[in-house]
Image (cartoon, rainbow, N blue to C red; front, side, top):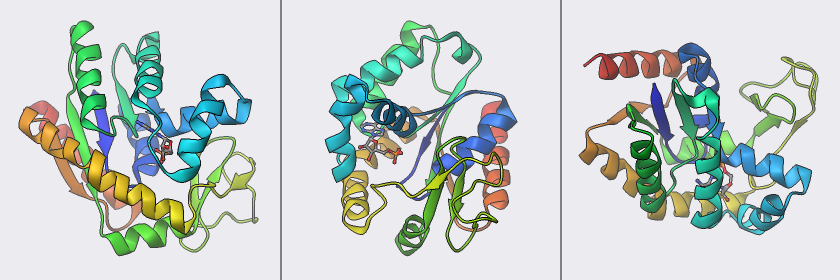
Length: 218
Ligand code: AMP
């Protein structure tokens, strides 16, 4: 299963990616997570990406594409992968196609998660993330038992710096201007699957698994 997840910030890509990568036994590759690890470790890539991430802009394609091309050379992607947060514009989608076609393969599906904009703001406003395992929590809908501590792994829970109102609004603009066109791109390729990402997390996971199974068995 070679899969990309598409959807605005707050659609639940990261949350669903965790379940789907486990279900299909494929690595979850989240470009935002890779940038955040680089930022934390103070690498040259992290330092370069920081200003873009802080303001909600896209990190330049040259950096992002090279990072993804490198990641897709690792042996764990031989039987598939789930890309989360990449591609984010048409050029990145074309680069991904080129990387895959050079490897003699192609995408099986682009799964779009659709969500109402009022819900996006509600989700992002209280979103919390475990620094250790990456599990997402929510201040109101899914709080950890002890504040600041991940129930799953005991790691420290934090709020992303770019989950503030001004940056969220900019990220949403970028999504509709630059990222949404990839929905049409994948529709034209015949690999697009759209599901509603409204409702309970487990309901959405089941919806995604059924839709993917149906699409891939065709
Ligand atoms: P995310 O965790 O996917 O919301 O990504 C956080 C931030 O990382 C984004 O707002 C961008 O600044 C940067 N980023 C993540 N993925 C990409 C990408 N594919 N292209 C450019 N920038 C990205």
